[in-house]
Each structure stands twice: as structure tokens, then as C-alpha cells.
Image (cartoon, rainbow, N blue to C red):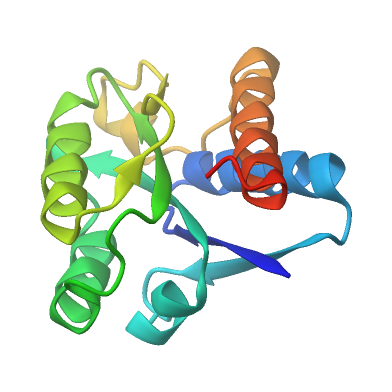
Length: 165
């Protein structure tokens, strides 16, 4: 059985909602034919990455950078996974207040170093949070954005199931 790992972190629940949608999409696309593992970035280990056939990485953007817990995840798994995950498919989801490009660049550089294979364009959701109150508020993700997340999860899971990735 193929295994999809979703590594995520969320501060104001926007990324968490995106992950829930991606998970639902993966389950709807493959039923129980693909094992789908959700691991919070603080708990995810190199063994999770090595056991997975594909990855979805989901993080908010903090100060034009990936969330600190996601960076910590990458720091912990990078060397144990180096040269052991070459070509493994991955996709990225980012929840950002206004831009998201800094986070996308950071994750893509790390994924390139790990020699992961990007199989979808980064999925970026902009919440337009610009004031301290809006930035810190619990996020609501619009239905069209959640549908894109579900499609990404379904596409990656179905691609693993069918052997496309």
C-alpha cells in the first residue's frame, strides 16, 4: 500500500483547515487504497518521511518565512533523509497574509537539496490579514481555496495509487 504523509503546522488555524481539505480530498480519491498519515511538524520524524511514498508540506508564512516549527522539522530530518528520498514526490501548501513567496522559496530550496520531486505548483492561500488583530485572528479559508486543497490532496494520493508518481 502506498503512503502519503502530510506534514503541517498551523498557528491561526488557516493551514489546519487547508490540511483537513487536502486529507478529505485524498481519502475521497483513493478510499483506503492509500494510507494517509497526518503528522504535526513538531512530531514528524525522518522515519515518517522515509516510510512515505509522497509528501504534502503545509505551513503558514510567518514574517516572510516558513513557520518556525516547519523549519525545525526540516532541520531534524534533512541529514537523515539526504540521498534517501531522491525523486520522492511532494507538494506544498502555504497560508499567508499577503505574499507567501518567501516561504515558497525556502521550502523549494530545501526540497531541491533533498532532491524531492515537485509534482504540483505550490498552493498559496492569501488571507489578506494586514493588521495585528487580523494577523492573530483565527482564519477562515474560503470554499474555493478549500476546494483547491482537496484537489491537491486527491491528485497526489491518486497519483501515488496509480503509480504516476
